[in-house]
Each structure stands twice: as structure tokens, then as C-alpha cells.
Image (cartoon, rainbow, N blue to C red; front, side):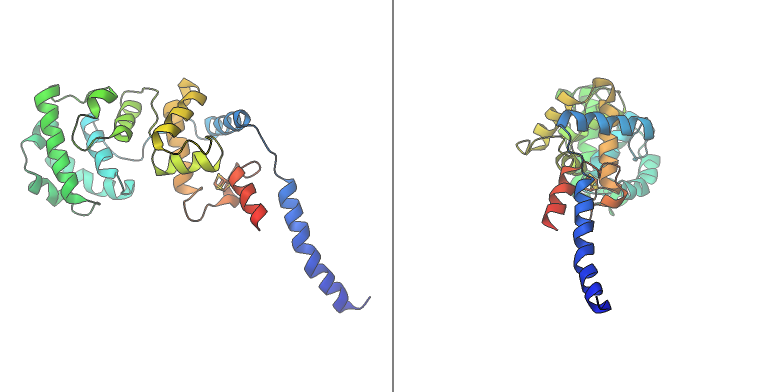
Length: 244
Ligand code: SF4
């Protein structure tokens, strides 16, 4: 056969072989098996995981977490050293005015609202909780600027409770990996589903495992599937390969 015919034959055949090989590597798993595999992997490879925010007390963790909404941890870690030097405690921040605090957080997202929340939150901590950060969702969400996600972070990271905050990364990765069904279409539903399926002793770590996987590997726009340890069974990747 002439060389040109061979060339054309391989040009057609090679992509087909690549697609077949890609598909044959997939190992469909039940949801239960996926939980088992993923948690075993993270437990062995990552061990204990925690937040990348920097803090020296429960109050500082609360401030940093409040500031981190819709902002990067990196940016928050750039502003908090000066902020905490000036206002190290709830009492110190409660005595400040929002305009003064604003000078320290100008470079984060929504600086006006966040500086106001920081001061109001510190004042309520002093007035209603004796300056101590409470340890229940019910009390934490009463604080200005504190929602369920922030309350869960405080309870997991500072108090070591089995709570799980669902942010944009945890929400996305949980769906892509098929850890939750499509009907789990709110952060609260995802949280409840994950809590039912992750053993209690893994919950606090699992939040950070899944979050960091989303932040560095399973990114929103361009997931780095070639570096992902779950590519052999990821339903999202399988779905994408079917679209190739
Ligand atoms: S294989 Fe890709 S889509 Fe699936 S979890 Fe990994 S990075 Fe995300």
C-alpha cells in the first residue's frame, strides 16, 4: 500500500484508539465506593488538613474567615497581620470605628461592608458573649457578617467539631465527583448529604481536603484532570470524554 494511504489510515485510526483507551480506563463506581476511595486517598496522602488562613485566636479566625468571603486566602493573609496588630482582640476592635478598620482592609473585596461587619461583630461579641467567640451555629449566625459557612469553619477549625462548610469549591467538587446527587442543588443540601456519608472523625478534615482539591486541581474553568488522582472514575471526566 502506498505511504500516503498508510498515513491517512493512521491519521483516522489513532484518535479512535486514543478515545477507546480513555473510555476503557474508566471504572464506574457506586457512590459509596467513591466516598471510600476518595477519603482513603486523602487520609493517606494529606492527613490532617486545615485552613490556609493565618490567625492566632478564635477571634482572629472569625475576622479572617469573615473577610475571606469572595476573596482569596492569600489576599486575606496579606492584610490580617497589620489588622491584628492594631486590633488583636474583640475589645480592641469594638472600640474602633468602621472607617478606621477600613484603612486596613481596603484591598479585600467589599471592604466597606466587611469593615462595618467586623466592628459590629466585635461589639456584639463584647456585649453579648463576654468577648468570647461562641461555639454553636445558632449563636455564631447572630453575629453581623457571619453566615452558616463561616459558623461551620469556626466550629470545625477552632472547636474541632464535625461540621462542614460548603463553599464554591466544595460545592463544585462534590458534584463533579458524584459525591452528591444533582438534586443537592444548594450549599445546605450538599452539606447535609456529605455529613451523612463522611464518617464523623473525617468531617473536619474532609472539608479542607475537598476544598483544596477544588482550589488547586479541580478548578472551576479548567480542571487539571491529568493531575487528578480520581480520573479513573470521575463521572465529570467520563461525561466530558463522551462529548469528545
Ligand atoms: S478528574 Fe477532573 S473533573 Fe474529575 S475531580 Fe478530577 S480534576 Fe475534577
